[in-house]
Image (tube, rainbow, N blue to C red; front, side):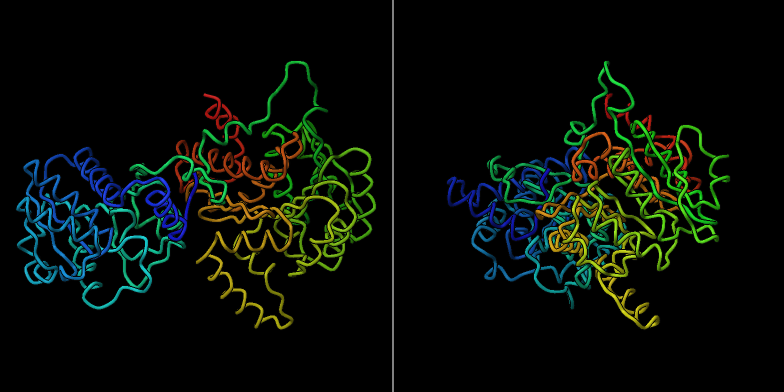
Length: 525
């Protein structure tokens, strides 16, 4: 399903009205009808308070109020605008509500007599501000929102909770905390990005008459990942096949104290369907790895005697890629040193095989993003926000770097989609920005929002598991973009299955690996 900004939705509205001849008032009536139907479905018959603004969002609320009042519900509308300031279609619906004898009062009345109206078993319809909010909410509007949020009554938001940015999900001064939201046509980015997702509650997307070709337009470049459109990416397992048909992945990972990262990534890669996995390990740790691997093979690489890779390992890595392995995933647990920096840099410049870079592999780049434009093969990057901040900015002074990276991380979290898209386009890489929700971005400017996963996955090693899964799918012949999409979605799905069995508090990364088979079964079921 496509996901839109406020401007993209306005353009869909405009084309629907101007090019397809559907009146704006008809869309408004469809929106109000959808809200009334959802209230009827979820809540049954209760008292209704409608908080209505001056724009189309307020008009949608007026329609819902009129419908429910006409059906015999106890409805009170509180208008947060003088009637003379209502926009054309909203004014028309206001007049219609008066003709139907709907109780309409000014919003100040609700503030002054809140105990008279905000009683138990009352449902609040938030139709104050829609997707077009352009400035922070303050003053009496903010006071009104505080009163409604403190009431603990069920709130159903029309289109988007008032005060949430449609494009970033950020709170604009103050915001309604809705129990559920009914939006129209397509979900907005702010419904899915945090903190907006928490304020949105349960999201219902209703088509109120928008032409399908507008909702599926290729000009809309952001999509929500759902099971039905990810299912087609799951690689087939042909009856007449052998391990060589499903890819040979070289995983360069692990150092002293971090051998678990390599093992988890390798196990996840095999569980995702890879035919062969070779772990490139530091020479002084080879004996330790040999006691822990079963299905995996090992490639012993020169190290510095302390359990970390030497730059001399580069030749053996490139040789393995040239002769046997079809791709490389590098970074989990390898540590950061001048040697790892050299290895990562030279792999990007000289590898003819696709590269997945994670964790310490990303940190080894020290913000040298220009090198990606010189890559000979596709590059997939899988940073969390902290690693993303280090990729985006390089500073020589340690304390200054720490401060700037912290500030940059905050900015990344405030605008995850645009951050990921602009970086992928600028560097020509495929970017998996981990976090909530995970964002996958392509060099062409497309982005995908993941819909799976849970807080229990906020634990050590889950990123290593994701790296292994993406590598496994890439090795089976998926494109870098599709391998990233399927890897992220299946990673979250496996995490959801594991959480349902173990609970979120007790979830560990190896539980996710153990749930990958169940995730495949669920996808196919």
